[in-house]
Image 1 (cartoon, rainbow, N blue to C red):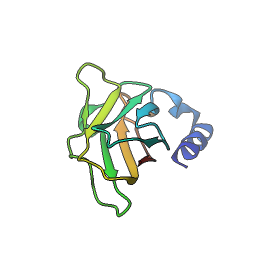
Image 2: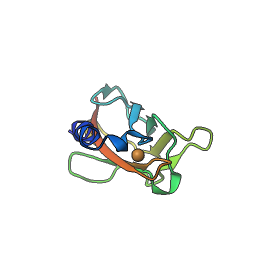
Image 3: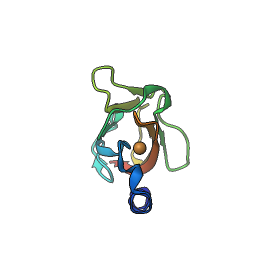
Image 4: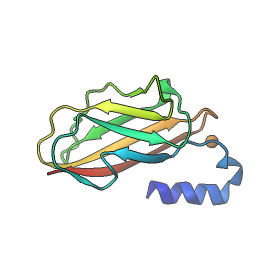
Length: 116
Ligand SMILES: [Cu+2]
């Protein structure tokens, strides 16, 4: 959904197409089921992001926060945003991300993953 909106925004406002940051890939992968509770959620973006304004929040099926609230941009890789997770029981989880690219534009979105 968010991706479709972003595409629509680019069609309507081509000047936005500069250096917005969008996710390239993530761990866990979007929509995938993992065998065991992952230690963290990591999202790689297609450009550098601003550490102060970029964060990830992870919620369980009851909307309870299950991340450790320690979102950070990897000091060695300015395109990687990650957050630690507490031990997750089997279930469905949703990742909400919000980042600001170097051009000052904010992008945000969400995706689900499942723990087996
Ligand atoms: Cu931009």
